Length: 222
Image 1 (cartoon, rainbow, N blue to C red):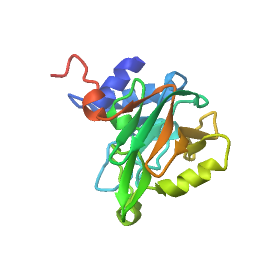
Image 2: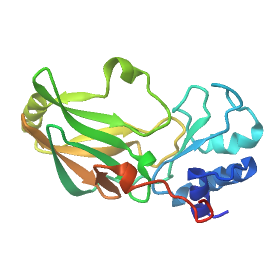
Image 3: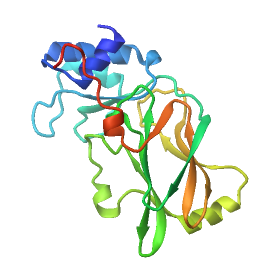
């Protein structure tokens, strides 16, 4: 199985065959040098929130991270190389604006972050939600919601520095990536009415990623 076939089958494992699904996962972890974005992979769950301990999945576990769920079956396979951030375009967000940052070559489920400007108690806030289409749920969001930055305060902070602010995220333990952290976007400037963000090379800003970047369906799947 080549990398393209593996990616296609992971997205649509139909008809489902556990050995073929295993082969696809092994192909991905053995070809991390050729990946350009992270890949979500679900090891079959033997029961509700039960860890799959079958040793045949051990190589996939060793080549991926399991931060997405407490049982460790929801895996993330990371590329071995993560390039430095290089801005390719800027996007201005104002009240009611929402965009998604999607890796080139990925589908909507690979979306890295959702960015939105919302109004709360008469003030505008810039919010950043990681992994908006992930099948793993962050229960802390029920209590506090995604990180939010008041535009007025953000504008004041940016006026005191001579370079953009970086929205960064650390790689989880076991990612084995040749970088300490990833830069999701840059925040170039802000006012009380909006914010200008920088989008890096290798990523696309989308307002409707579900329709713009659907999952890849192999020709053999109707």
